[in-house]
Image 1 (cartoon, rainbow, N blue to C red):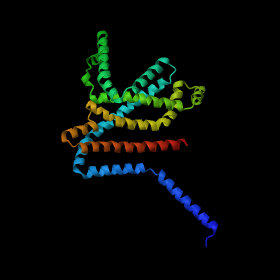
Image 2: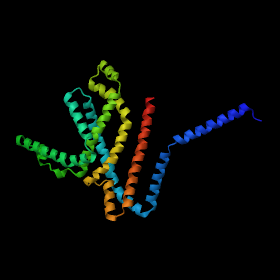
Image 3: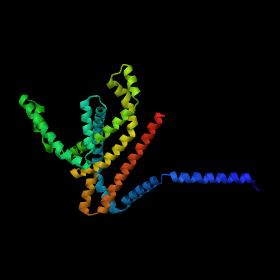
Length: 291
């Protein structure tokens, strides 16, 4: 027979096991399992049902446009964001206030309005300005550049290019704040130590501060890339043939709205899900390297 102490120990072990199992069940990522099941069900549906397969074959023609537009726009936005972020922390009053004005203006206007504003207002005004400069140059000099600038037409700027410019300018402001926060997260002593070793401000920023800042903000940059990929669906309103526009065209011509928009939603979900896993992997990788 078991003694009282043995019974108490057994009960304690059983309670601890039950509590541990309950905690594991509570902390288990059930949302991840549900998301994987949704994606698996969507893939099986698209592959097995002819109407969904037909919708997918039509819509997938816009994948290259979506990916290309997002990649080019994000690379340009990175450059804009870096320069603006540096200007935001600059001691130069003019550049600091100009950068702040740009960021606050972009953050104060809805994304869709900004896309229309840049595509149909800013770019035409820029073309008029280039034409005026070209005419002025042609009156003082003769050459190819002035001729190209004075003869540049608005129709030469396709809607795809306007969409890329709009996304770049818009997300440049958001990335500027990420870069600013990343640079300011690096201890000020790093800059002081670099300057004491004879480095200029530019050298210290390039070799010491920026590498650490970029490592700190890498997860945020990845999340913004995913956000831009989703927001790129708005450029379909400029008649850019991305997957959203091709889905609209398919739905309008076939009247299969369920198939078109369900397939479109699942395509975005799969792409963003894969990219999210990649961002989490990179985040863990950088955290491991820091340790």
